[in-house]
Length: 279
Image (cartoon, rainbow, N blue to C red):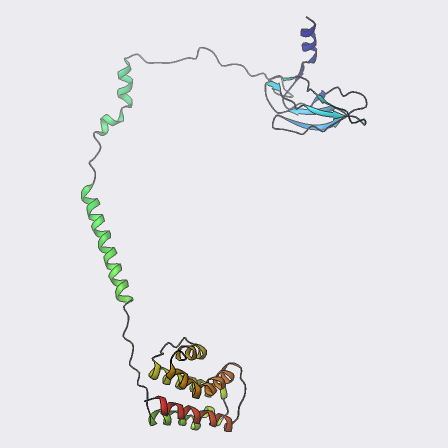
């Protein structure tokens, strides 16, 4: 009987949406941790184990957390929460929701169950489902295959390798005359050295292509020299061509500067190189 009275004394009634005071009965000399809000209640104020909360549920017992308390001596204890029951009524009104009438009213017309099923059996009026459209499917597959074949043939035709144009490379004295013609070019006369040595670069590459088959224009002069150096004939060729390659690099990419006398000397070296190696 005593336990029953203690249980009834701990019960507290609250209402949804209405602030309610919760007392954890904190012992003297103890401090209590803060209680955080949750989806079931919201904490408005807190003071030494006394909290003001707002229940967020309609009708149920409110589950509160167990809090930890401690004192200055290092002792700690757990505070069990009081039992809070939330009554199901609307705050600030006298409206109390009522249960619906039971048993519910059912207006079933007379007849047999099959009569009701017949009224909703839409498949009886629609009939059997149509057959699979094989003809349209086959036609679609054939059309798609034809389009794919057409696109493949078109791409192959577009990507077909075009035959390279045959470029005539002068040899012997003709190659020498082509090199010496640079002495009469406007770039030589006006001292446009990067442009002049661009033409020297072109003639050197033509000689390397005719003698050693190096036709890739994307290669640098150093890469061309590295390829030619792999053979004894190529090393002999580079002994004469190295000064020309070095000067071409300085003039084209470093804008080294030159004079007519200096440029004439390298052009005559190029002419001699082309006469000997363009045969």
